[in-house]
Length: 369
Image (cartoon, rainbow, N blue to C red; front, side, top):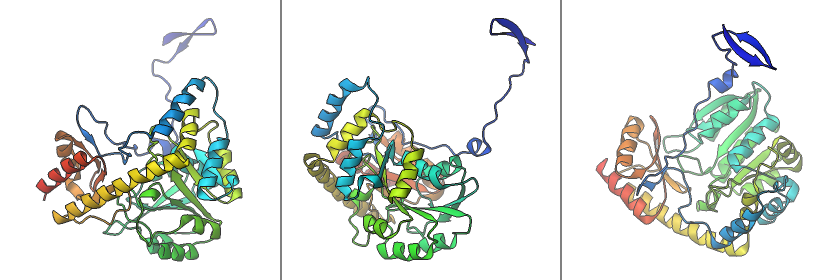
């Protein structure tokens, strides 16, 4: 036995420490794998970040707010919520903000998922989906994407059972890139029970140029069981500050808000988000996005010319289905100074970055054919 102190008295404790058990679902969680951090002159194409530096007006707002960080932020992010509501054309009571769209999705599931409820989502899709589902106490039901990286909505509809509580629809799909066509989404929604929550995850909305893409706000207005997820991390360049939001019917929004972490969006993030949604910043952001979309097209076309089959990506990344070659080629890319995001056994997602970074990746990809 080992002596130890407790409230001024010496007690004894077993030499073998007591192990506090984790929830089974938590112990079994897959690890979320972030994009690799660059060192030296490496090109980071692993995290779907906006490669442009913060916009001047946004940076000024951050710098101004820095002098106030000794105070708690507005718990309800009132001004930010109002700015988002004005931006999308909805009422403020339909907007819920959080520490990135990942955190907001977690709050969505906390609001509606009971232990054992099923959450249906495509696979491969956003890596956080199975983690968030398990933490919320749900049971994951995965539906394979098609060979060209698209969501198989008929198969997802067929996977819905009496136990299904939520369906996650990622459009454009991360990591493969295609959007869900509007007609397909309407057919899917018509086939799903009204008490099943359908989350339309639009983290890459601003990069979409496909005419068949759905108007998620119109879908939301007509389907009260839909929640739309968006973020300011990607196109708006606020990945380091984490601002995401959900759009929902007022009753659902109130439930999601009730589960949210108090003060979940910090003061700097709130002020930066408000600045990013003002007209001068929006104009600059749009110009940056257009440049990235043009680069996306150039990279995709160049890969196809090399002989690769590349899905019709509508996000700020491209996807190569490399199968068992994925890990080895990703390591080779890292050794050459190009960091990509491998999904072992499936494929490689490569973010669109600066022209020099994209060129470096294209040169590598040409040697892999």
